[in-house]
Length: 563
Image (cartoon, rainbow, N blue to C red; front, side, top):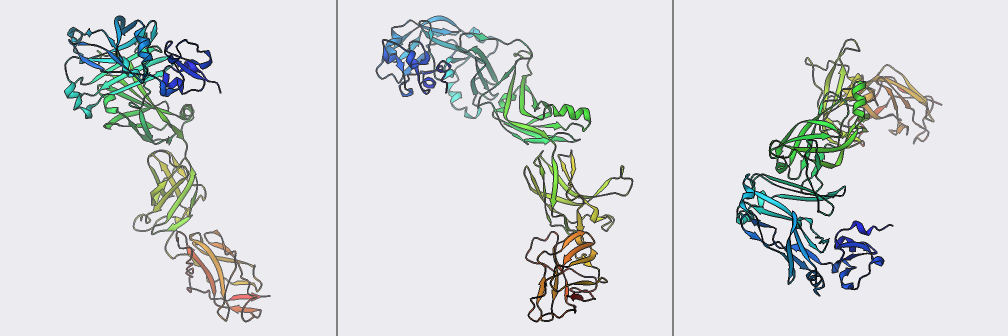
């Protein structure tokens, strides 16, 4: 693996890399084998031996003199202090015009006084960038924040000490060969009030860049000012509704003071952004119309991050815009509903439906219902909700809901309940109908029945196909034909019955050759029937008998057994 030593610009980051060492004299990270120096104590190979430089005080008051002072730490033998003391030290406060010297274990710049006239425009604080140089080398600090020194227009140290609730946020980050500094304070801060300062410099900090173009966007990259979360992570791609987005931003209230806020989700404009607490934004993303042109445009950006942009509302402030970009991405998808189980349920409700598919966690809200088509032309007919289903849980591939009782229309169940469909709608937009099965049956309690006027027969060895006709067969599960012999023994075929449609099922006759008393054939056994559990029943161990039209457990004609 290639090790690029020069990329590290501090002793600590340099010496963590194998084969790299830090030169105090050069203030640079180089490959160890390339470093040669007469003073080996100025070459650091291990991070525990790195000297630390920290600023003693980072602020002062206008009109008073201050001495920018840097403490030298982890210099047990004093080699670093001695080396710096032998060098010419210059303090650069916006310009390199101030001398410095080593006093004991510190670098001390000459006293500087900031006149009060600097605050004539009403500024509450000024922040200056300070570098310390020895010879022509810049001293590298471990913490870039130590380069920034604040001068307040008045003494407010006591107020700052009690202002924990109104603390400022400070961010430093590097990108594209530049270093960035951003500090902002809220309106309630006792020293500055609402306050922003942004500084952009080259990698060494020597050159400051100023912004003038109206379209400049600074992308903030730091933990103190960042998007913490985005919900939902999937939204419907097309439809007629909207998806409400919730974006959580650390220090959003401070960022939004005196600024307009705009939000884009994967490149789509998020309308009407509203702040409802210190760190939460809500906005609405319209779903694209399902036209060919709109769908093609929507497909161009199917996924992407959320970007929040803050723009100053004051004409006296720089027009530079500041943007946050989420690490999470939001995907615009087309949810699919593939199947539903069970395929029927009682009119009284209480069934737990499981809808399976893809991207079923899309959007914020999902509604599941059982609907039937209204009478009329197929192309123009509407639909009626006959049963709602309250969502219990959902994830990427599953929606679980519990049905309510059938909605009565005009006092009765005026619908073809066996031709109902399961409908799923996401965020008031895209509607999906479950395709497997294409119809869903609402079962009135106890209405499954066998036609009593049919005859039943089978061989004594079993396995004969036994057609069974009746009504509401789609409302039963685990149906089995049983026959009881004259000694009370019950016989059932292991395969059970196969429900073909709502009025027909095919059973198999049981093997009756192992009776305690052999069944003489031909025989007519009157005690037989079909047992099953009603669709939607969770108690699989209980198989209640089907209610027959003429008798609870048997048809009028006996079950004929033949050889």
